[in-house]
Image (cartoon, rainbow, N blue to C red):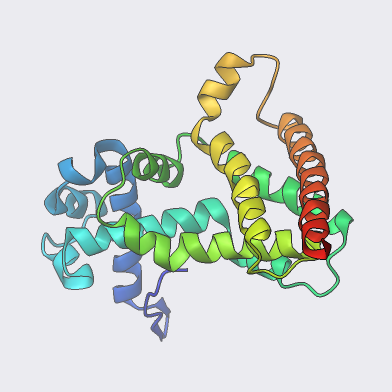
Length: 227
């Protein structure tokens, strides 16, 4: 979760905590609708029903607020904690990997296309801002490394192996493509339903396709090492 200061007092969360989160929620909706450049701090404060100086007070300005909104959007869409727990499990079996693929795709496509977190992420991926570099360093790269450790486990290769890096990119690309191009995929392939049970079928396909690919590539890498 974001690096909020959770100050607890009698009666619940402190006013600082609730104000910060109210601003982030309002900013998420506003950035999703207007984008970073067209949104203003005053409009966000009006939506959050807070003092017009609250964005500067709590975040130091619109730029850092946007970074916090991107972090929260990524957290809601990607569920980093769940992925981390899974990748670090000591008893990782193919069945558990299959369950992960199902759960992960559900989390990506289960987010309503109209939710602000989804729309903010899609906006940022389509036209990255200066905030994207920080998001990559703090959240996207760690997420990619967890996929890399998953690929290494299946392939039986070191996590820093070049073949593992390529394999991790291939895994992530499948999820990212469906998330970013969901509407196009459904329009081009009307027989595919990317909701409900359709998500389960797609997740099962990605899992089988990925496992076969990882094992084939791992075999090639090991054969080259032996030779």
